Length: 64
Image (cartoon, rainbow, N blue to C red; front, side):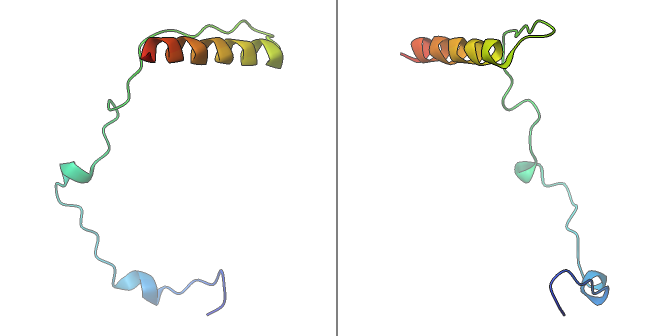
């Protein structure tokens, strides 16, 4: 078969292990973040990049 071709026979014998495997599951609350971000409507790219720089600098100070 060539690249990009589709063979239905490859799909027929697949076994999906869908039993309760919570150890492998992704938690949507694993990386929750606290805080707020405000963006004024019509902010320029430079303004947004400045806000990002401020956030990163504050995080670096907090990590020290």
